[in-house]
Image (tube, helix red, strand yellow):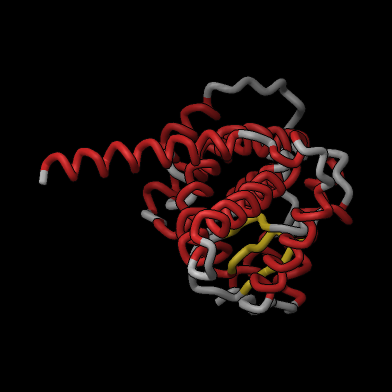
Length: 257
C-alpha cells in the first residue's frame, strides 16, 4: 500500500511539475500565433458568461460618483476612459474585480463597506492596475492553454470540469504573485491624482481587520502587502484632496443599501 501511495505521489508531482512548466511558456509567441485566434474569442465567451450574471446598477447617485473617481484617476495618469469599462453590480459579496474586455466590476456591498472615497479609490486603482499591466490578458491565455491541454489528455467533454477547477487554483496563485505589482501601480495612480497613496496600505489593513474573506481570498497576505506599500517613497506633490463632496458620498452609500 505504501509503495502504491509513493508511486502515486511521485507521478502526481511529476505531472503537475510538467504542467506548471508548460504554463510558463508563452505558446502564443513561440508558435507566432495572433492573440485574436484564441484570446479574443475566449475573452468574448468569458464576458458573455460573466455579464449574464450581473445585476447592473444604473442609479445616477451611484454611477455619477464612481464615474467621477474613475475620470479623475484616468486624467491624472494619462489613461483613456475608453479603455476602462466600469460596471457597478448589485451584489451582497464584498468584492471588486477586473475581467476581460477591460471591464472593472464593483459590487455594491464593497462600496457600502468603504469608509471614505480614498478607500474606494484604492480598490479601483488596484484593479485598474491589473488591467493596465496585462494581468487579465495573461490569465485568459493561461485559461486557453489549460483547456486545450486537458482536452488533449482526456479526449472527452469531462475535461471542462477539471479545467475549470484547475484554472481557478492556478489563477489564484498567479494573481497572488502579481498583487504587489498592482498595489504599487495603484498607489502611484492615487499619488498622481493627489490622494494619499498610503491609503492603499490603510485599506488593505482595514480589510484584514474587517475579516472580509470574499475579497481577501483572492488578495492574500494583505498585511505584508500593506507593509510593502508603507516602505515606498512618494515625492511631495502638494496637499491631498477630496473629489466627492460629503453629500455626494453619503448619497452613494445610501443608494447602495
